[in-house]
Amino acid sequence: MSPLPNVTLVLGGARSGKSRHAEALVEGQPGPCVYLATAEAGDHEMAERIRRHQARRGARWQTLEEPLDLVGTLRGAVRSDGAVLVDCLTLWLSNLLGADRDVETETQSLVAALPGLAGPVVFVTNEVGLGIVPEGPLARAFIDHAGRLHQAVAGAAQSVLFMAAGLPVALKTPA
Image (cartoon, rainbow, N blue to C red; front, side, top):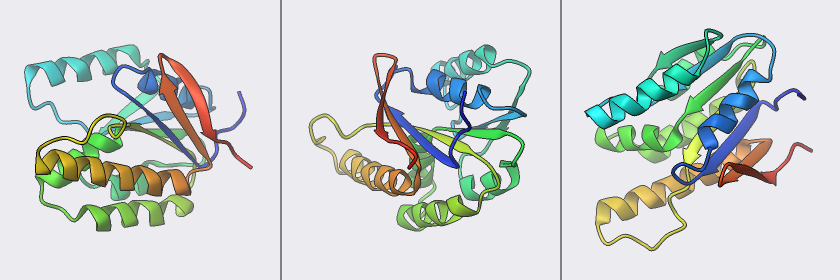
């Protein structure tokens, strides 16, 4: 497998295969694999999802859990001899909104940090803007924030993949 670019964004809908594909990208690289999880197990169903994700990853993976300080954790986790998988940006966004953090500032901080990372990082995120505009103001704000976050990270990424039915569609490829 060819070396990963510094920043790859893998987005798609629920159960589109984005996490599995991103894991394969990272596992295809030499060195350690770091899984930076932004999810928090707020209920039994989410705890089971997290358990299933952990069970399918082998011993080569180190898991870091960080629901809010994504930039600081990335700076400490990304190394030139391995790759980091961040799963996922939309859960991070949800956490930011729940903690009443300034999403625009956090997004700018993330994008500003990307060029200075020491090695490749693959971001997974849910594309939530393909359906109808939701009725509630919080849901509309979430979709708006997610769209802006995705555009910012995609703009900084060298590779962007959209997942549908387990198949990657290249939206942006390294020059």
